[in-house]
Image 1 (tube, rainbow, N blue to C red):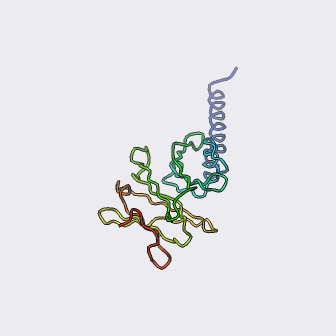
Image 2: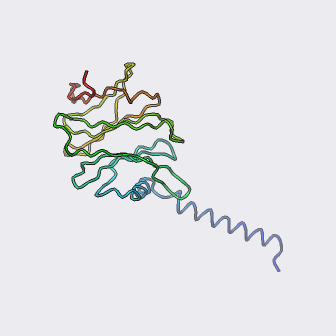
Image 3: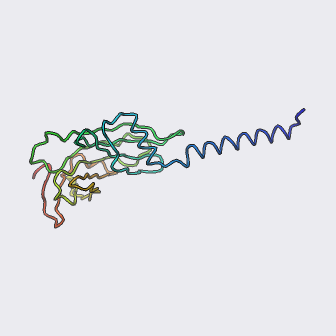
Length: 189
């Protein structure tokens, strides 16, 4: 018969093996690959992730393009759970048929009620005019946010800006050339 020390040793070995299994199956996974898998759950047609912005260890925003000509651009909020990353929500915009004078796409997402995220606002869009190299968001109080612009090559790109101040929804967005010239402004002054 087993004595108490052997039973304790057996339990310790089982707990150790379960812990090793958890580490191998979850902790050592590549977060970017796992986030892309999470987006497979929303069936993005002909889509792919173009950028992932990690907000903290457990939350990220994945920006993606989709559609036969990559005309859809969107974002997906993802959260790291015990067994991997999960899609939590998001939206996209189809840029087919956009007016020819639109040189910069613009979308807003309120993050205020998203648990575990310290940001309140996400302002983002597609760079339609390849001459735009910089994007600024200027709040009604005059605060300027320099957006992150990601150049995908071939005149394709996108931009995004995050805020903790609940002020980007009414901000003026400017698309600037590499010399600082305003190419596009929304809304127009």
